[in-house]
Image (cartoon, protein in one colour):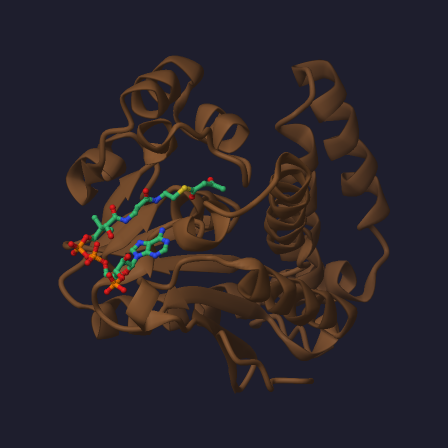
Length: 263
Ligand code: CAA
């Protein structure tokens, strides 16, 4: 796996990897280079998915996860360049969703604009007590461009999302948790990263195939009507029958032993 990037770091730890956005001086703001490197990195992970069982996304340092898209770079963009920038950022966000293993966003400090958007494209969000979320784009005369208008509404409900996006106000971690944006909070970044590894380890003991199919069905289904979503669920439920993981899981139960999903 190519791990040589300038603005991001990919560190593999056994079955898991930690992906860190590393532009600490700019509070890990997302510029074209970060997106290009993220796109390359996530595409490689997707194509070598058998080597990993989980990914953690975080930001370098203590102050910020990601303080948004790079305002310095954006201030010079033409309309076409901005469209291309948003499209690339959206492709990156989709790649997080398409990875066939769980991705946990570990939010330390500011997760604003594009930072909140990248966190939301992960499977769930852990955060430190200092985390701060928001979509402040309208304060800059912009709108969210990496999926915020869509994913925030899906996650917390359209009206709450509108209130946040129209006011551009930042919210502290307690409010983010109350809204369902954040799943768990932690005192320190180290504690949060350790908990994310524990969670991924726990998930990794289950059938990797079943976890990956559950992720896919949930991502695909949430955009559909309940009837169509249930059809997708039944389709994959049927397809998973007869797989090595299904046979091992059910046989282990019947033999009163722990399943060993060693593929
Ligand atoms: N882009 C570029 N540089 C940024 C940045 C960003 N989004 N956020 C922070 N920085 C830079 C600052 O310019 C500063 O650089 P210098 O030291 O060279 O001046 C450095 O990071 C440290 O930031 P501050 O001095 O501002 O730190 P602070 O503690 O006073 O404030 C903050 C922190 C509240 C996060 C503030 O930096 C801030 O408001 N940042 C912008 C947040 C924002 O508006 N994000 C949304 C961007 S738009 C977007 O994301 C669009 C989209 O959806 C695609």
